Structures are given as structure tokens and as C-alpha cells.
Length: 244
Image 1: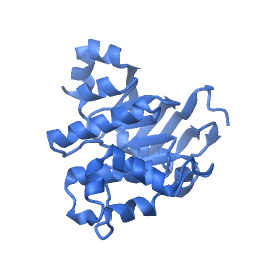
Image 2 (image 1 turned 180 degrees about the horizontal axis):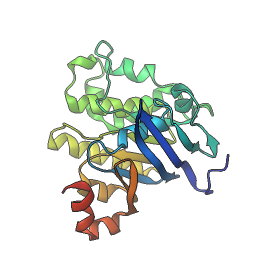
Image 3 (image 1 turned 120 degrees about the vertical axis):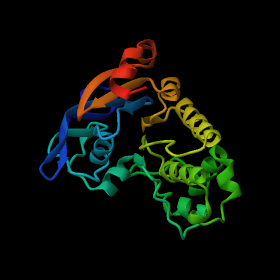
């Protein structure tokens, strides 16, 4: 399947999805380029998480297509999509309470189908460099971590797979301001390394500083898309679609 653009890493076309008789996504088009950061915005209930679940195989689309690196993935199982190089940081973190930090990272360090570019120890070491607090807590169980530490662990758990695309559903939801700042700094560092990212969050001002482009969903449709410069310059977009 042709992804539509030589630079396209992820390409979603005319995607439809829903639950039971309810249609949630109505023909969504979205793409993420290699090394690009794209923010997915919109009020609650507009379809952002459903779109992420469809991309990662956790929810089966009803129509349309999803291509990753030029190959169709809309019918693949979640573990196969992950092995292709899609790393997910889910909403709610979903940390295992009875595993230590290091056990989490060791359990998820299996790289994509193309093979690792570094050893497991090197990949885990890079996570500890990005989040020094995790190194300090490496023997702590998941249920002994703060919310911010759990989010760092959820990000690190995705990064040890060496994903070509990192997807974060509510990157800093419910975190204290200082911890949010640490998360934003880590995402900026990943961007500087060339990591492609699709991120959902409500802190638009921080996303403007991080993302290359923004896609706003309204009732399951793409209502607006543009650059950070364009979004920053038009307060009416914020008011109309984001309520801020």
C-alpha cells in the first residue's frame, strides 16, 4: 500500500470507527512524517482516544485505511503493530503494580521486527538518562511510584522498544506542574533526537512549543489542521474548538 508521501511514517485516510451503533470517527485523515511531532487536539469526547486505539490496533476501524511506513496495518493485531515500531503510552499509564521499574523496562525491551540498533542494557540506560528519577526508583514496585513517576515509566516502557513512532494519549494529565515540566522537557529532548511523536494533551501552549503541526478533532471529524505558528496566531481557533 502506498502511504501517499515519501516522507510519511503514518498515514490515516478516511477512517471510520465507533462502538455498537454509535459512529465516533467520520472519515479522519491524518499523517505524521518521519521525525515530525504532531499534536492531536480537541475537547473531551471528540474521538482522539478512539483514533489512537484504531491506529494501535486496540479498536478495529469500520472503514478507511491506516498505513505505517507504507504498509497497511488497519487489520493487524496490536502486538504486530507494536513490533512494526509503534510505541504507545496509554491514557491512565497502566503500570503493573507488582513489577519493579527495572522489571517493567526489561519486560518491554524487545525491539521492532527490524532488529535492535543497540543492546537491551543500552536501551534501558537511555531511559534512565532521560528520566534519572527512574534510575533512583529502579527497585520500586509500580504501585510505590507517584503519578509522575508512573508516567515516566510508561514513556520509558515504550521507548525501550525503539519505536519509530511514539504515541502519547494524555501526556501530562493529572500531573503536578513540576512533573509536567519534566515530561515536556523529555519530549523536547526526544524531538531533538528525531523521534516522531503523535501526542494528545490539553496544555496547548506547551504543545505549540513542541509540535510541528496540530490536528483538531470536532465531533469525530478533522475541524482544523495547521502549524504551531498558525495556531498561536489565531485565538479564535482556541476559543471555538478547545474552549481556552
